Image 1: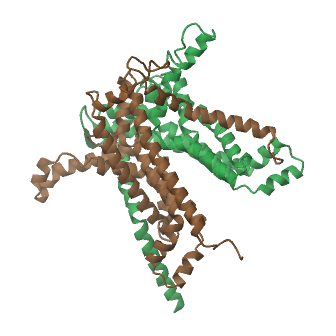
Image 2: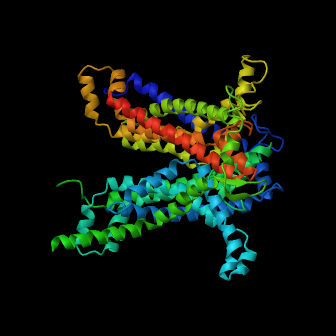
Image 3: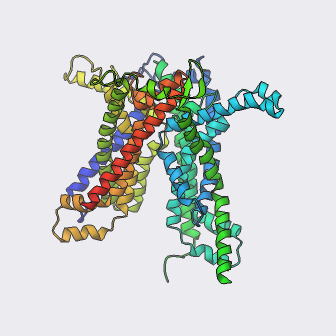
Length: 300
Length: 300
C-alpha cells in the first residue's frame, strides 16, 4: 500500500472500474436506445438507427406538452440557481461572524436536507391550501371581497414550487460555503481593509475572485438539483408540471422508446450545464494560478 | 471605554450577520419550519371524503393503525409496510456502506495524484447531477423480460424462461436504490479519509500492523464521522422514498413513503400528515439509535 502499485491497488482499481460501469452502463444503454429505428422497442437489439422518437417527442404525443414543461423547468432551474448562489454566499459570509441563532439556523438547514422530501412537499402543500382557504373565506372581512371571489390558488411554479426547490438546494450551497471559508485566509481581507478598502470593495475585489470557482460549483448544484427535482415538487408545484414530473408520469404509461428520447434530451441539458460549469471553474482556477499573488505560500 | 466600543462593534457585526443570513432564514422559515408545523397540526384534524375539517381528531392516526390491535399477534398493514421499508433500508445501507467505503478508500489512499483524484471524484459525482428517474428507467433495457440480462442468461443456457423477478420487483427497487444513493456514502467517508494524518498509518505499519489491522483499527475508527453522516443520508432517503419504490416496483410495492402518497392521492390530508409524523418519528428514532451506537463503541 505504501510502496506504490500493490495488489491492493489493482484490486481496488478494478472494483472502482466496476462501480463506474454500474453508474454509467445503464444510462448509456438508454442514450443508445433512444436512437432506435421506427420499429424498435424498449430493449436491445437496435432495430435500425433513426431520430423517430425525438421527432415524436417534438410533435408531442397528445397527452402532455413536453415543450412547455421544458421551458418551465429551464426557467425555474435558472431562478433557483441564481437565488441559491446569492442566498448561500450571503449566508456563508454571515456564518463567519457570530450571531444569535447561528447554531439553530445551521441545524435547520441540515434538517431540511434530511427530512424526507415528500414530508416537506406535503407541508408546503398544506401551508398553501390553508392560505388559499384563508384568502377565500376571510379577505371579505378586510374589504377585499373582489380578490376573495376570484382567487384560485397561491400555489405555483414560482411560489410554492420555487420554495420547495430552495429547501433542497440551499443546504448544499451552505455546506459548500462552509468548505470554502474553512480554507480561507482572513488576513487577505485584513490586508484589503488596511489599504483602505470598504467592506463592499473587500468583498467584490478580494473575497469574490478567490471564492469564484466554488461559487460556480454552487450554481451547478442549484441548477442541476432543481432541473431533476421530483419528490419535493410532487405536491408543491401547483397546477402545472415540470419535466421530471412528466417523465415520471410517462413511466407508467409509455411502452415505446420516446421515453428514452425524453431522458436523452433532459440529460443533454444536464451534461451541457455540467460541462460549462467545469470548464468555467478550470478557467477561473488557471487565471488565479497565473495572476494570483504568492500570498500564503510562505516567504520567498 | 474600549470594552463599550468593542461591545458596540460586536452588536453591529451581529446585526450585519443577520442581514446576510436573513434571506436563508426566511426561506427555511416559510418553506420548511412552518410547513412541518402544519403537517403536525393537520395530522390532528378530522376529514371527510373531499376535504380536511379543522377539528381536533385522532382519526388520521387511528385510521393508519386500523386493525393493529385486533389482528394481533398477526401484523397489520402499516406494520408490514414499515417492516418491509426497514428491510430495504438495512440491505441498501449495508450495500452502500461496503461499496461507498471501498470506492472512497481507493480515491483517498490509492490515487496519489491530485489531478486524478479530482477527475475520478468528478466521474463519481456527475450522475448525482443527472435525473434520478432517468437513472431508474435506464434499468429497463437491462432487466426487462427481453432485456440484456435475460437474453444473456438464455443464450448461455443458464435459464429456459426469462426471469420475472429482475424488474418491477423488490430486487429492482433495492438495486436502483443502491445505484442512486451510494454517492451519499462515498462523499462523507472520502471527506473523513482525506483528513486522516498519513503518519498515523505509517506508525501502524512501523508498529507491525498488517494491512487489514491498519484498516480495521486505524482507518475505520477515524472514518466514523463520515460513516455516520453517510448512513444518516442513506437511511433517511430510503425511509422516505416513494419515487424509486414506485417506478422500480411497478407501483405495486408498498413503502412508508408510498402510504403518504396514497393518502394524498385520495385527498385525505390529515391521514397523510399523520403518516408523515409517524415516518418522521421512526426515522429520527433510527438516527438517534445510530448515533448512540457509535458513541457507545467510542466508550468501549
